Image (tube, rainbow, N blue to C red; front, side):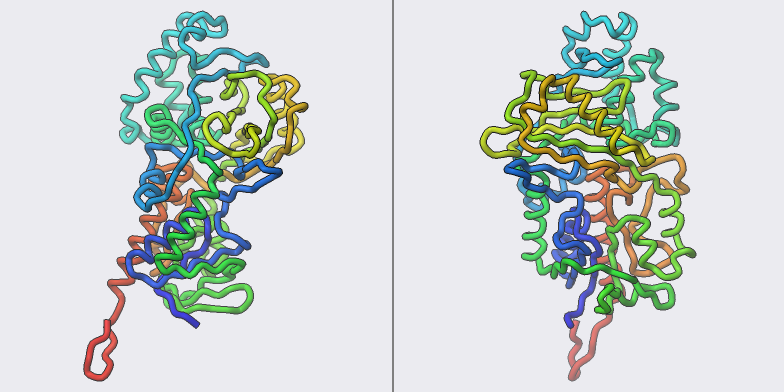
Length: 437
């Protein structure tokens, strides 16, 4: 069997980046994916010519992941959605992003309109890194006087972070994400996120990574608190001293015998997964022309016509997306589906007549963890301090980043540290009087 310097567990975008960067640094790398294809939550499915991501996906142009992907030559084709949209308040559609319409609307008082204008102009100037360790709600209650403006701010933060947990979510990282979305915008991708996965896979293979699918790791074996071997459920095993796990905190904990004595246990127990219900629709046309974006103000709902910015279907059909943010708790899938369909009816009456195909995904885990007050440490990984040679990466291994930015940034940190440690511990082999390095 081949020997490897570094093994990467998990073939999502974080795992692909970690494997690629490790191989480009001259390491022999194997990537092990338990499913039949790499991609994780970056997979895009084709349903009757409509390209559906696994839930709503957007890349933040000012984020770490965007920069890393561009650095590796990944082509990100597509466009940015318009910021002109509507809100949903007390069962009615209200103007939101058009300044003139907001000015003459009745759902905001004159005082609230002035405060909203002030908030939007000042948000970009807030030093998010300097905000103390407080919840998003505590920051908003302190900084925003008008209750209606606070509702709008929570809606904006919820949409930017894909997380509905203002009482626990830390204010600094959430505000940083809001600032990024307002300053740089987001991008929807032609062909969906599968285009990222496919390009990263090709680049990883070209760099020398061995990608093995349908390979489920059962155990990361240790010897004297150091990684020594990975074992698959089918009995195959590799001796390897450096492992990067991009699996969830629960799955990573499960793979390590004796993990209850390590930080892995705390990371697993402290994690607060963010979940959503997602409804994707492929429509022949959109009933209300120009209504491409809507944010729930008094309900955790978001609607976007992704086809207004990216090519995601054949024959001129449109792909639209609706999300209900469920926070950390599981929700009733049927009730969530009814709410999403009712929201679609409110925004686009008679939409059912236009449906070509659809996809409903209840209780999707958007991220396995995010910065929140219940953490003992606000920066996780990349090294597991009690285990030499074990590193973690993924959307939950954040140093203040969120979503794909956390996945990409943590993958880079883990790869660089694993390569550094591998080089430090590598010993020259003496053969025939010569030193082979």
